[in-house]
Image (cartoon, rainbow, N blue to C red; front, top):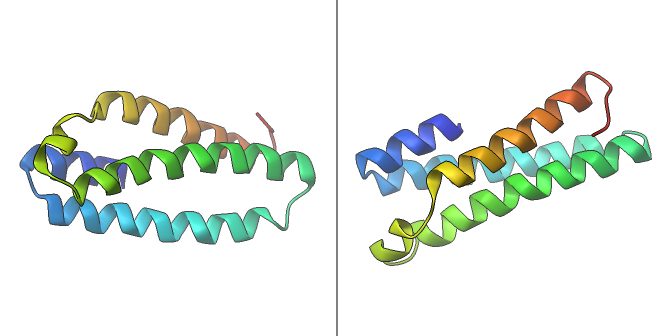
Length: 99
């Protein structure tokens, strides 16, 4: 979904980017529910990674609903790096590693 958001942002399609950002928010809420069923170590690691993803997408959401200059201030590459690291951490949880 991050790829779809980036593509929409580069194309100047704020509406499409916003739709994807909101979809991610709903997925993360579902994921938090799944995490609550795991052991404490996995819950903590998952919550930390999920918090980073939420923070990144909340930054995008606020900018998408604000003036154009707010969106231009966002470093999309830096957000992408943070998101990729958080997703890798979540993937490691699926394999049974808590990071």
